[in-house]
Image (cartoon, rainbow, N blue to C red):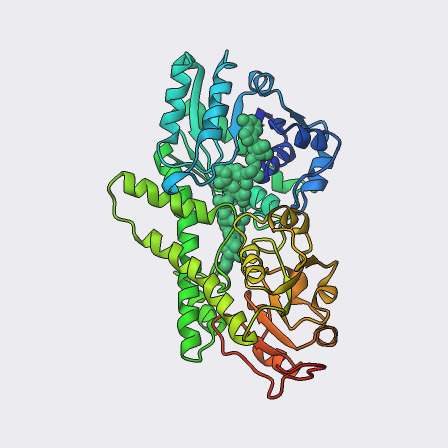
Length: 470
Ligand code: NAD
Ligand code: UGA
């Protein structure tokens, strides 16, 4: 590494911690700040508070290269670039709640004594850059001592480290050449390709001959690129879910339709997977925040509301499928496979799976849930109930179940031993909100199988009712 930069990352969540580990991997010196003392202690002791592939190895590799602290002021003073990566949750009327960002900026202001670049890494509405400027001015920071830059993050949970080190693009919204140059220095190992030339580089889509692309824009454009990207991806998901509902109504197959659509290079195959609708800490709040921004500017963007409505409906449709497969829910025993908002993460924020489990419990069903990584977090939000149990694995969850529901697209759930599952359940019914199986295969294995946007396949006689009548 020829030109390391001293970087401070504020927030050690899914974005901050990943960014800190990756900046260290790129050769920079990193101070990672959080005001959650327990989290900082865990990190200092070598613990990793979130589930993310490659993160434990990178943090172990760069122990010493990334330091964890609660001392924001000290970290700011010691750094050239200060990345803000705190939460921006949904606030009133859909607007982003920027109170964490404002609190951090006010504190940063007290510790700027020489030139610093303040970087918005959190997802923020357009003109947040302006607001950060104003707050710093109000606190008396001399204009020549700072620039504010937008550098949105596009990583996905579950593949965050590889997404960060092998990005489709790096977007920087910078108003001055000085701040743009510092950002160029920071990302040089990825943009120049030297990182990929190292034998120890984590492999991904990019290489020394095909390195990362850096796009420099105005701050407003950069802020809008982030909101527009998330809204567009959410649009693709809602679009395919609406088509799935139509496909179901006319006995077509959404998987074939998505394949046919995705082969058009102008459309592309990504984010056309029909299912329970999108969840997570970002799409729901970012679509709402983007709509709020448009409203504030008097721009009609009701399309964003339609994206949200289709997404909400998708959970109702799934719940109704459970009802029509089981007729009544009180006293029924259901296996819920998955609690996380998607596979390969322990994050349950806005998880469709959690919402379905809540509704099943409210309707009187008994649920045995299993998730490979999200059970501890789920226990903190699901109501304690004698009707809700947690299992240590798929087959334990499915034992004596009246139906198995697939709610999260974990790889493990796509690789179930179907004979063993059939042995475990009371009735061989699988209701799959993630389309992990082919209907014909499930039929051949003795299951009644209901999925999204594809005809349901029914066993002529429900396979093997061991007791009771379906
Ligand atoms: P998170 O909730 O996982 O982490 C935020 C961290 O900030 C927490 O550890 C919290 O303790 C800390 N924090 C809050 N206030 C603080 C303060 N005053 N000082 C120091 N630390 C403080 O959030 P996240 O998922 O990492 O998201 C952060 C931002 O990045 C959001 O704006 C989000 O929209 C955006 N984003 C998230 C993802 C994702 O996949 N999670 C991807 C791209 C962008
Ligand atoms: C998403 C974006 O993909 C990232 O680029 C962005 O940085 C991030 O939001 C953010 O701004 O926070 P993430 O929320 O981690 O990343 O997860 P995705 O893989 O995008 O999935 C989001 C939701 O959409 C999940 O519930 C997933 O199950 C669902 N989804 C995704 C579908 O239903 N169908 C698809 O085809 C793809």
